[in-house]
Image (cartoon, rainbow, N blue to C red; front, side, top):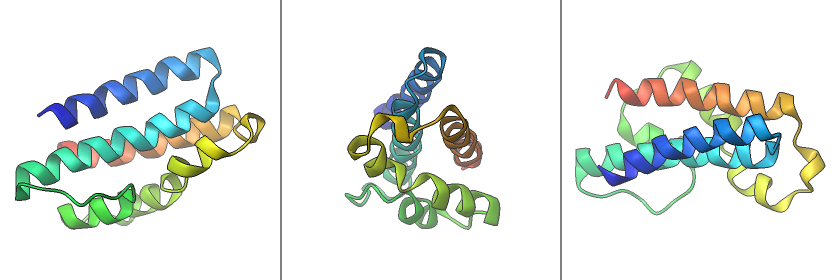
Length: 113
């Protein structure tokens, strides 16, 4: 499934961006990776997916996620927009690491579906 592959590639690009210190991009790509994988899973499950960037909505449509997964969604969700429209110095290494960790929690759950 192409969407899932793109999501996995996005997470690899997030890792590369972390190494280069491009923290806003790490946060954007962390969100993007989850969004694409979730949409791919929804397409497999239902034949379509909603046109939204809200990963909390997408995850809830896929099943019954744990509170840890829901918390990770809540943390990561605003970074789709905020990372693109904020000043670059708003994003620190710590924030980027948190985005990646939260994306990993969600991506791990998505792999179980």
